[in-house]
Length: 300
Image (cartoon, rainbow, N blue to C red):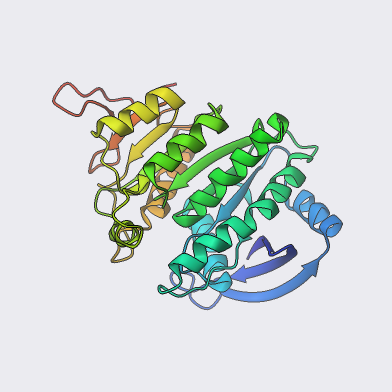
């Protein structure tokens, strides 16, 4: 049984999900409770143990609330991490024809995400608050970070550990956002895939504008973003995808990352900014990627 805290359009609640029918395949919603803001804070504190991390998942385009809940449940089960999962759901049309409407909804939801992160940062626990934005949700995360920085809420940003998976963000727009947000500690992590078909469609819908999540790790512009803004960019093209669009490799990445942590009791992978490439075995190589590429997996 797994509990997922969720917030959508200012409404908060708790969902209980179960895999009792078929643990290898199925998630089942077993209950739903509506909560006001105070009750939501208390529920998150009850779920949190000691310095457990809070994980806020922000879904992408063409995703319904129900789909996002189960995606987060899947992410938590596959990663098997000790964390409090929180879904931030924004009003997607949940229709592939609603791309423009979804982009407007991201702007609409920005203030609500800022309020959620501010609320969570008041927690008495010293544990980190991880924020993962997938696809168009990554754009929402960057806009919220930008707003927090412009509001002078460095105290909130200091509690965050931010990741962007397959970000559906124009590269030039991301560069501007990153300039305002500044360097994060630990570094902002961006997962990219050269064969992401969903982002290829997004690029066409936006007049051919290149999307950050579709970039190649050896592009000079990507190298410059990592160097100038202190961003950690990881090319996960070599990892298997579970969808035909190659748009969900972050699930595999999270599972392998957590497995490495449980195996050696430490945080594996890279901890510094830069551009990195996963090989077919899941090892992380630093750029450049010729024969001189240096293995940095497990470095500190």
